[in-house]
Length: 129
Image 1 (tube, rainbow, N blue to C red):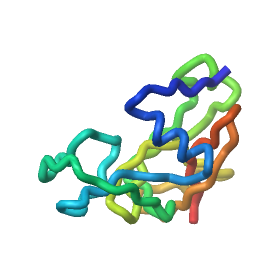
Image 2 (cartoon, rainbow, N blue to C red):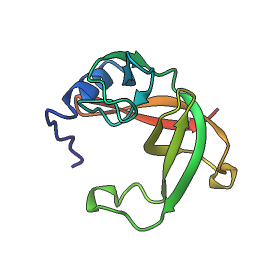
Image 3 (cartoon, rainbow, N blue to C red):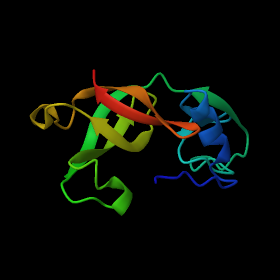
């Protein structure tokens, strides 16, 4: 069974996912959107931030097709795609890309966010836009 382990560093992110919201920190000093969550901005080192919701649109930056499951809990899901999505907000986000036809998957293709329910959470995933 696939489980999500909450930790103080990721709890806020996953709590927003329960509400189907993809939320990032945005530095109030320099405007950099940061992922993963951090206690300070990697650009200007400010600890001040506000939360910013992603529109869930972006492009495939990189991807891999798994034909052998990474973990035993994924054995019924092969083949599956894991990709780095460059969101329009500038964040690179690792997620699944879901497609019926893998030949349509290419770097630079536009994708959009959708949510898949898993236990008490919603998992952010992407499909071709």
